[in-house]
Image 1: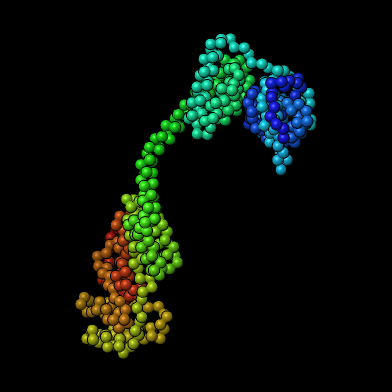
Image 2: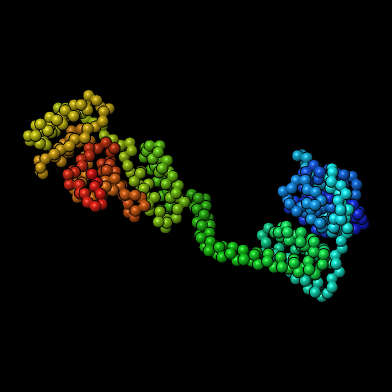
Length: 444
């Protein structure tokens, strides 16, 4: 690594080692960081560091070419001096160069191990109209400072480089080198533009377009910010209020509500699948504003989940004699039906783990079908719930509606479990023969 030195007394030789560049254009007087990884480039830099440290930097015509020849380079490049070079662990080099002046490649004199060429020095063409050039230089300076102010990626200190330029040509080169948003073709075009006035005119056009793009972006950002500022302000105020309440040991009503629901979910004794779904909905509810349309739907869904009898059940009292007494107390006669019911109760006593049977009572109105169901529940010590199916024309009344419907509720079976308060009540589907069938479907 070498220290930076004065470049005013450096002499550019007529034959230069040529460093091909991809995606970078070096301008005179500009200090540019470069990276070299190709073996030929590394060899070139190592030999240059042993000598005058002056190399020629030229942009490739095709950036995908790994080993370009002289014909694959632009004809005009920039002589540069290497100020610093640092070897990386992977073998590549990081270096800092400063442009000295333009040159034109006359002919190649060497292709291996790296490119060397005979060059012709190019000086800036003398301006034809001093007033025009001065006006263009002032315009370029003002536009560049405007772009620096508008751009969020450019540091404000960059605007001060215009004061270090010695002359309009150097000013144009420094500004072109300082704007990373300029297209590579425009950069190379500015390097090849030898007339100072023409170079400044092209730069004015590019800076004007860049300033317009940045102004439009700033306007869009300002409009979006004004729309979001109210919502963000309310959000920040709510967060501050939560923090203050937390420090005071207080919580707002909504936080208390969410915490209470979380405790109910933990205490409900749900299955793992149901608990995971309930907590997922609760997390959505906590992030949702109360005014949202989904808030009520999610809250109702969680309320139903925590109110279901997940673990509550009654213990069966399977006693044939007591069941016979209950049936006799509630009904006179109906001996065959009572005997059949007692048979099912006896089977349940022998096989407690077996499935509970489904009994179908058929008969005219008023013979005691519904009261028999109540007697069975009383004989077993279970809760009883009756669902009247007469006139139902929509299966959603039994199964439940989708949550997307306004005011949607679970079906009659789920509601019956909640009303019964246990998970093993005796259900009676009454008047099942009166289920209606029409063009909307058949609930049966």
